[in-house]
Length: 213
Image 1: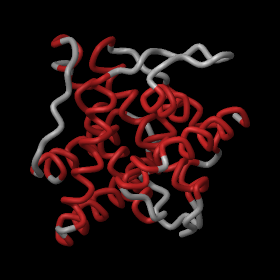
Image 2: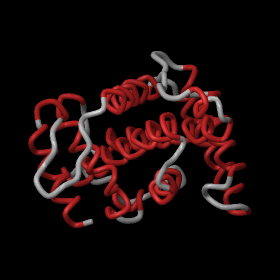
Image 3: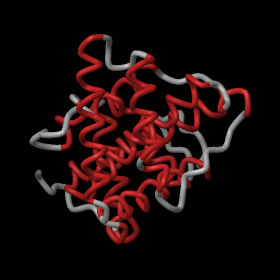
């Protein structure tokens, strides 16, 4: 796996796109289906040569790049219709990075997740990537593995949406996709210190990639 700034930025965008959708589903019950499919598809692209191959095309991460910039910059930008920083999105993203570190210490859980994703991929071949049965399978896998780690990610939103079984499954599947992106970030040489000390470089690269989308 390459260790370029571009690859690390793509991985971060994968995290932020997934948690942005978690926020959307939990608060409104609505989500961008194409962005959702991109996140779920990334779970099944394990042996990619670089970060872009995990997502198919950087254009599919436009929401992720935009959200990353919103959260790091904390203000709107000329020429972009940005939303203000959302504390829940940042909280989910940071929680995902913490859980990825916990996961790396548990080889047995990593094996369980790999096996579960392989089963879900076989199921997707008979249905579709975002079929309710596939998403339910991925959600169950998250519940049985990542959800047992601490600290747990507590999702805030409207009770009616969070309590909806299909929405709850989408949220858990998206969190699993966010963990996958965090693993990718680490594989590409990403670290918390890089995120803190190279914030401007991350913003510049995200902006460059967003403009290409």
